[in-house]
Amino acid sequence: MCGIIGYLGNRAAKDILLDGLRHLEYRGYDSAGIATWELDGFAVVRSVGRLDSLVEKLGAMELRGTSGIGHTRWATHGRVSEENAHPHRSCDGKVVIVHNGVVENFLALAAFLKEKGYFSSSETDSEVLANLIAYHCAKEVDQRGHSAFLEGVRKALLHVRGAYGIAVMHGDFPGEMVGARNSSPLVLGVGDGEFFFASDTAGFASHAKDAVFLNDGELVHLRGGDFSICTLSREKVEAARRAVEWHEALVEKNGYEHFMLKEIFEQPIALENAMRGHFSVDGSNTHFGGLQMSPMELRQVDRIIFCACGSARCACLAAEYLIERIARVPVEVEYASEFRYRNAPLDRNTLVIAVSQSGETIDTLAAMREARRKGFRVLAITNGVGSSIAREADGGIYQHAGPEIGVAATKSFTSQLCIAAMVAIYLGRLRDLSCEDGVEMVDALRQVPKNVEEILRLDGEIRSIAEEYANYENMLFLGRQSMFPLAIEGALKLKEISYVHAEGYAAAEMKHGPIALIGENCPAFFLACDGRMLEKIQSNIQEVRARGARTIAVISENCSAAASMVDRAIVIPQTHFIAQPILAAIPMQLFAYHMGVLRGCDVDRPRNLAKSVTVE
Ligand code: M6R
Image (cartoon, rainbow, N blue to C red; front, top):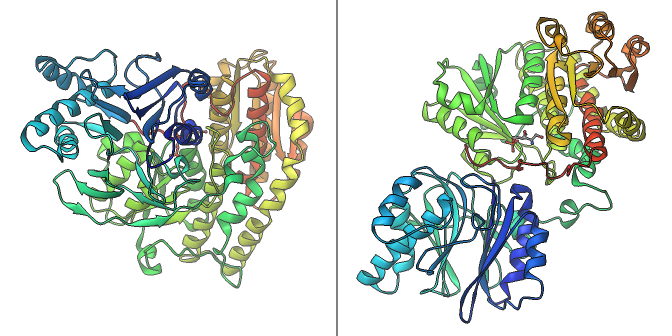
């Protein structure tokens, strides 16, 4: 939610900031803005809408300043308008700030500041933060003189309750910049005599050599060609630098019309990468280097709780079916946002697993912190190398799916399904799963990238189906057993990308309510890939058809008997049940994509959404 960027160096800041914002725009796109320090003070330019409108507004404006900050907004406090866009300036004009997060006590702070003569002109919590910093810096200048900027920010933040990743500049200290974080991500980029702040490394990866991931409660001070890090309680922090990895090709569309389509087509590679190095030499088992748990400890686990949001949660629901069936370990899946506050009783041998593509989703992070606070071991499955979730987990597994820019989770979702399948095998082999069954499952997973390539060749056919269905406003997604979580994911994908109202249901459960929706205005999309459930799902298809609804179905080759019962069948390769969820996901992604495009939606940046949800 919201992308922030900062630059302090020798080059003109404007283009560097815009380039950074281009790579961070997936975090929010309600408005964008930059502030640079020019010879005569701050130049602040902001614009409602996508980054392109800001670029247009900046036009030929001659901004030569070599330091500046920028922001791309996902609105929380205050409607989408230019005055609510960032950067915000304090009312004395001295401080400019970009902020990602939510200041929960902003009303109390605003009332305090008003008494002191600091007024806000926008509806945002972030402008209050700018004023609070200006107020404390003014006090520090009176008392201390030159180091007052950092101290002013630090003191201001001591009064803030909530989440923030900020980059701040002060007109009295033009060669300096301060960044700080609490619960919202912030990374420092270090280049040759230049420094960057960004919400994630994508913001500066083409410029910086090293990255320093900040922890909550840390502040970075850029001054005199160097940087220093301290905590809110003024303790010095040693910076842990990591080399920045940058693959330009992965963050460009490479000829595809949208990132979402490109990322759907990247799935064979993303799946190869998820599996690389995880199969045992004899091909009967999987292993993971980063779990930080011995086989003995994992053998003691008698319950797993998955915490996640959105598509990552759907992947966990599929994991529940696989792990329970293969490893016979009871699994529960929690909405991370609910788990955090529910104070659920957990048994001693419970293992918590947080799953998050970005590794920055605040609800998942908070759920994980809550579990750790109670003394439970938490593993993470994430695509976000160096992300907050990766750093705070006790151990975990990286997805290595590569950057996912489209807001819809696609390759990250199937790579989570693939890791879940590998974890199920590993836990199973620690218990009762036979070597033979292990070999069969590993073989099936090895075939998955090829199977996915085959399914991707159905793209044209799936587009033609979407053409027939693009005018419907409602749709039900129905599946049984491990296809039920896929039905939920299919519905989520369709609604976020095409704004068609969709629900995912267990196919038999449909009869207990949702069937009332079924009719000529509400088609049903079935997932019929589980041979064991073929007859049951066929009955469900008949129930829907009997009520005049049109039907589409994703059908495995071994379930082809169901094909003649539906209006449109998408036949995918038959596979072992462990790999079925991965294969079934692909046609639904393509269907949602084409529906979105045909309905004129911005599929990479659907309305009201952001890729990484870093506010509660
Ligand atoms: O980065 P995360 O995996 O934690 O994100 C979780 C959800 O916000 C995310 O999956 C969201 O639901 C996607 N837009 C779904 O396509």
